[in-house]
Image (cartoon, rainbow, N blue to C red; front, side):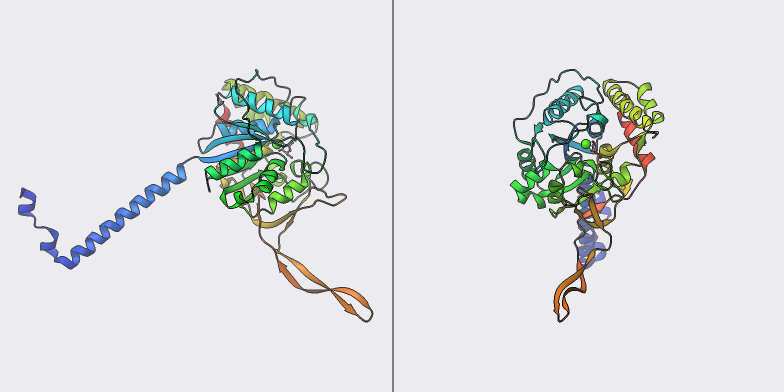
Length: 373
Ligand code: BDR
Ligand code: CA
């Protein structure tokens, strides 16, 4: 027996066996709590796996570069959808950007050729002839993934159950096609954080936002799928104006990525200035920002449907803030048939709608992550 044990009797001798049992139990419990806290902090700090579905696109380009330079995110794939530009141009842009960032390990897969039920509308007016603000990137060293984008999404979700966050920043055609082909992905997706929609007026029409307007049927499928969905729409995107003051930091602290983002942003800001706005709205980058840090926005849950038929409202995201609709039934009366209000039908709160944003905090985050890169 060593000195300590000789001079300091075991706790059972000092306190009796009952108390010892309690102390041991307490110690075991504390050890368990410590391990649990450690496990939870490791899980919370592990980067979030994201698939970005994109129609690149100037603001898509900034969004992709932000994601690639954010330690909170692990970009597992870029899937390309036609929207701002054609599918072929979008693929070329995505591949050139990953090549510039030296990230050829990230798969880039081509999806749909056109929206589900209508002709494609492209937006070279806002994004330049090549979609990247006419900024010419060197040819890509990266190769396209041979998989069809909806198949890639399905495979990755099954291979990483409850871990993949989908970040669609273009029309929702690819995501809808993945859902139609394999609805079993719904409970396996961690969440969807998308750029699209508006509950305060559109940018294509008085009612509709571009990504939703470019494929309303696909959007309605995605909105009603039953998975956790956050809508980062024009309501908040219009407040995140990137100005010359913001991009000055990119010009000072240069690198290939910073230079590229500076030129793309310069193109967008010049366009905005011509239309009497001091800055370019960072629509798609904000969706990535919300995937990084959801505290940037306030996002109350609402019921949202996508209007697919309205003459003036096709593509509008219609939000019900009350959580219910009137329930009317057709009844027969001697003086004719009419509807009578019976009460209310409850609606599911299927979308968290971003209604407020800390725009300056987000813009600072964007610039500091992209300067000197
Ligand atoms: C959305 O439409 C596209 O032009 C942008 O890339 C963004 O995704 C904004 O309405
Ligand atoms: Ca986009």
